[in-house]
Image (tube, rainbow, N blue to C red; front, side, top):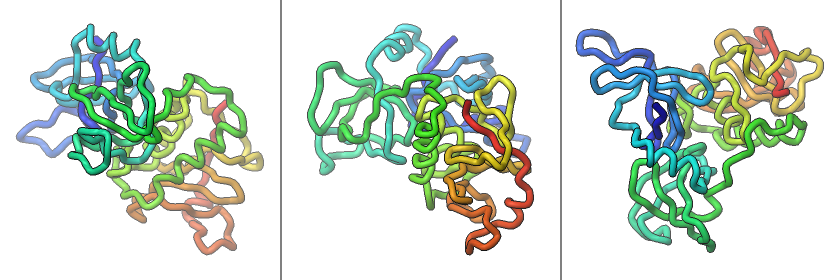
Length: 271
């Protein structure tokens, strides 16, 4: 059964929580308007799988499962949230009440034939609101051509998260981890890569020699990953720094990270 994610973001847990045990690990986040497949029900909890084949548990109350609504969402004109965080207003103007805030990568339903600086949108959780037209992008074409320009656009998108706090399993400006930053930066441009810090068969990332490093390539370290920017620099969500920042592979640079540079074990490229 397919379902829509309703809240702005929802944590995917490794297991359903219990009163007796410790809190389960957060493995990922799904965003409003994303379509997921419900694989299993356990009380109020649902095990779901994302389009990028990641699985986890979330509350059933966070899902819209009505087949008709899912179909209308799938077939209707949808928009992609582009700012890292975008307030949705009750009326067409920023002076109005805020209905909710959506993160980059969330999807909304658009009304046909509307134009102008403000767009009325339908939320996956029901209800509606208004967004500046500049906050919306058309959904990207799946599996875009692997050009250098495409990979550079992905790298530039990751830079918008500079300074955002680090959070394990996170994928929004409220908190993001290293693979969340990398995978979301590719996803909003139409490329589905593996969500963890490893090159996984079946996804469009292939190893390339370090000597061929180019902007948009993925750097893989033990338990960590980053997006390469060019000229020896990379952007990543660092647990030790507690935020998204840039560092360098160049030993002469002021922001050189010796532990990462010496631990680089693979370079991956979208092909």
